[in-house]
Image 1 (cartoon, rainbow, N blue to C red):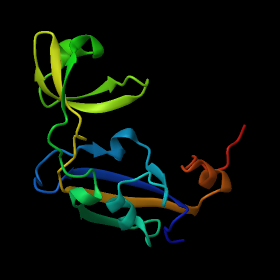
Image 2 (image 1 turned 120 degrees about the vertical axis):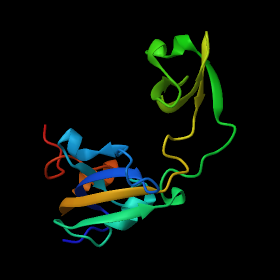
Image 3 (image 1 turned 135 degrees about the vertical axis):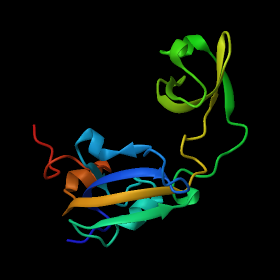
Image 4 (image 1 turned 30 degrees about the vertical axis):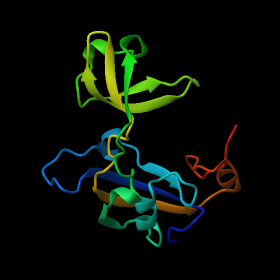
Length: 166
């Protein structure tokens, strides 16, 4: 079966800066042991990865470079924010360039990059850490199957055959 909208694709991937072949990967699914599971056509993946998966089958291995516009967007200026240290769980360990999770007012979480550490506050950058970067993905598709009706209704893939058991 070929991957298309409303199909579930399992795949291993690693991603690094396309402009730095020697760079360590930003992320590598092999480290977690489990492949990524995604329902295509429902906004789960960055657009460039989703487009690269369409039409492919289980067992395919390929590489693709994805421009910022098809990944995490361009960096935006003016997204720096000074936040009191009390809002960080691990404030004493943070250094510029590190990423950390910041609790938002509405109870959510946001991944931010530490820009500068002061005495009582930390300046963070709200741009996604990979914004502005052209990304190089190594992808190996392990499985493609039709989505179960529940998965389409929920807008995301479920492990196994896709049917909720329980």
